Length: 471
Image (cartoon, rainbow, N blue to C red; front, side, top):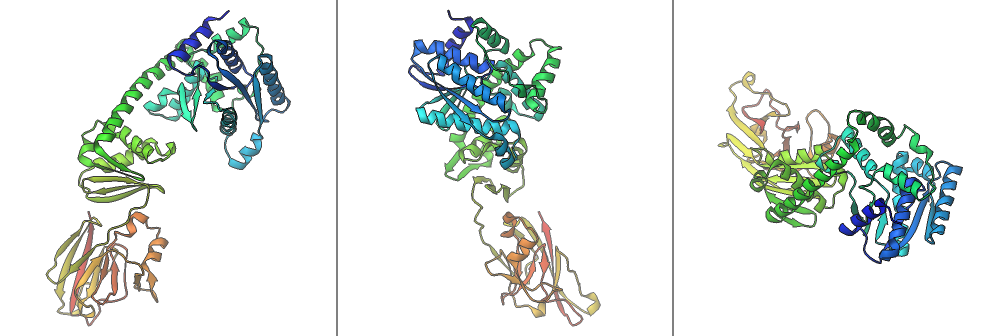
């Protein structure tokens, strides 16, 4: 006789197409009440739907004889149903030592790896997991406490494609008490994992301490969190579709690069701006670890801020945001800089370099006496003896092989090496202006270092004073 729980699960599977008729399904069975009930429910329903079930269990070798006993229990349970069973024995403690992951994260990673191996062996397109509604509530609470956005409030998805296999959670709308009652009703034995009582794990703290405390204020707190997850799922689906429409409308995409116009982006609602950035990063095949709030906001602020002409934001080692006036480009490769060169003569009093977002002021002066000569020498100011230079002067970007003879030091040094020593960001190295005379002598790396040439001294008669102003 089928119980209400089995009927509820069957309806959910059919309505949401979690499993199709004739599917091969790997069922993850730990031996606890949740997975034992899941295996039994799917077994009962499989007779009607023609599913082939494979039980899969991982012995993590955390708890010695207890872990071995659970593996044997699952094997015997599967045999009692006439099901094939795969047991994976994985030395998770050794893996923790190797990777420095915490215990639960390491166990999860190796467990899912094994489940996918079993799915591949049997040609299964579904892996059924026994997460239930109370697990969902705990997950949402954990994310709230750690900090999350709307997407995090969705909790665990009922279905998710991973490595071409769908992970499904048929019990995600079923509560723990109903599962335990199901096991009792069918006189089903199960194992109790002693590690579930260890408060060193964050999830256990939530389940054992936080949730019971919150339920003293609201007995239906788990149900409230699950309703929130349902609401956020609908909101997320809507925003996702809207973001995809916007993506197709305003972006130009090619592998490793996505381009859009700033004016199109700034017209979007704030929520869509953030969603679009996430979608672009996903399309560029960048991992979920790059979708944190701080990173998204840095990118968004670069796009929306006014009075920025040319700028490169190196978000990390695989992501660059290039802004060229009103064009915004996301790219996974470092930008190839555009070289520039501006000639300077006695008539030049001011010059703006858009590539460097910098302005220069020039003062060409005749010196009446040594005392009146300007001896400025700093990162942003330099005074040069004009009679020791060959005009015209040029402000240009760096070139391969450029060398500077620094003031106060012997010999010369490659400009490239000087930037490396100063830990200059890659995105800045090719935009910093170099002052060069007609002989090719580098006189000043603007905002950084001057050379030993054309120093103002007692015999100086003509002086060029230059001042750098960053915009």
